[in-house]
Length: 474
Image (cartoon, rainbow, N blue to C red; front, side):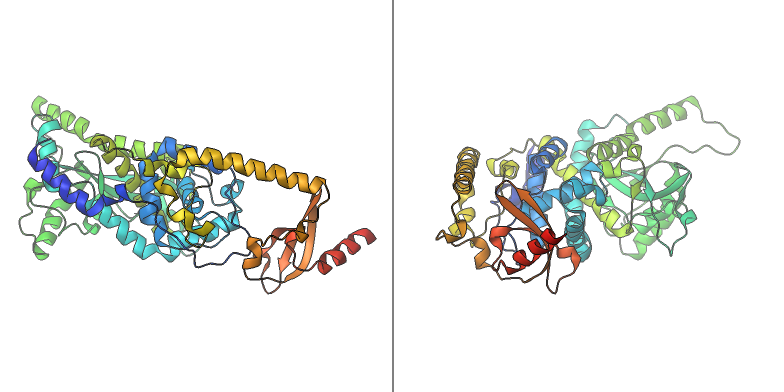
């Protein structure tokens, strides 16, 4: 690696890549949950698929840099809520489909908190990282000189539109406004600029296909003060007629060094005059080289089924959230590519999230042990933890089988330390060997908060006696 490249990477590393050495930050939720925190169903399956699709480091980055910034409802392991947000994107599942792992109402509460409540902050954060975390003009020029074919050494950026097949049913917007001639149905178009190393760095808003062509969307990206005078964008002929207007806009914004040399495009045929053999060869070579961006879009669809047109139409309820999801997906792909391209080491802290029951440290839980446990060999500790949990579970079963009264044991449960909630009524019950679980409605809470509660967790058994009496009389 030459000194210039090393210097540029050092600048980027100092500002954006310090997370590689992060430990998992302490997280204390603002929400008080009435019941013990639960694991997401089949969470290990989710974790394994995330490893296969994204790798350890991109997921680690998401957990310690992005997801940790906000707080979320629902009594589930905090870190696993973040994994569900990612799984929703890579699986292509609808919100209701997530019901296989977590009640869809609970997932929707997490979804809204992450994507809607924090939309502006999240968009600003992700946009900055896309633009500055992986690339610089200097790096692009150096790499272009190394990898570009002869005659195209000046190209540092690629621009193209990505169309997505969608199902969008907003009452105030007519469906025909979304019509895509490519899909013969509703579609969204987003402009993406990749650098020479195939890092996505600029992403436009997502707009209905019918009324927004590539050139118009290029002008709307507001790149006048972002495009460097030493960069050169390669695009197809559809953008050609908008170059002059873009240059005018750059001059108005004070970036008067942008000119026609900052753009490369196919040689256009003059009316009634065919291209000669050299011009045809140039266009073929240019098209072949620029087609790298198509492979980038294919890679996106392979990693994130939500953006894979071969999987069918994706349900979209909010265009801005869809666009933000696309940006986050491109950001995580960039993380993985950057780590591979520059041989970034996968460190022990990057893989801890894969462990069963792992969560962010909480100083008020387990005598603060979670705040320091990652300093030790968690991979080894986890095995013993699982063994000990199995021992305790067997011990508990033995107590039940011997008719011990658990409530008389001098043990203060975690639930007794939390705020008490009053049961309005018992709706139904289930029997599990010697134990009974009741589905209850909480007083002063709507039905969305209904949940299952073990018999021994009731502070007062009178309501249980009343309920059982009604069952016996039926």
